[in-house]
Image (cartoon, rainbow, N blue to C red):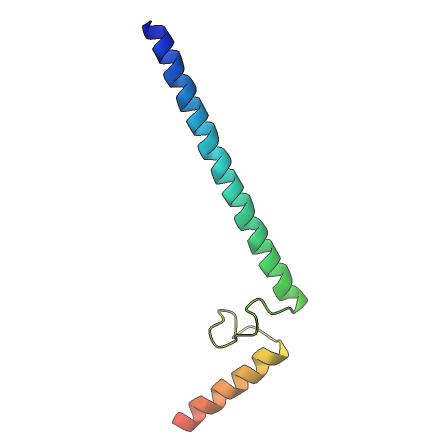
Length: 82
């Protein structure tokens, strides 16, 4: 009877491990796809932040017209404060 319990436990451990690694693999693939899409959009010159430039993480490197005007506005605001 004890061998049967050990087999069941081993099967459960195997199933748990398979599901865990399948889930991790799926999450990794989804994360990679999102990263690749974001990178492709940036290279194609498409805004990835719905035109909200002030809080965008890549504002300094962005060369889109909306970002350039936002940078000019922010620079003017900084100059007026001084």
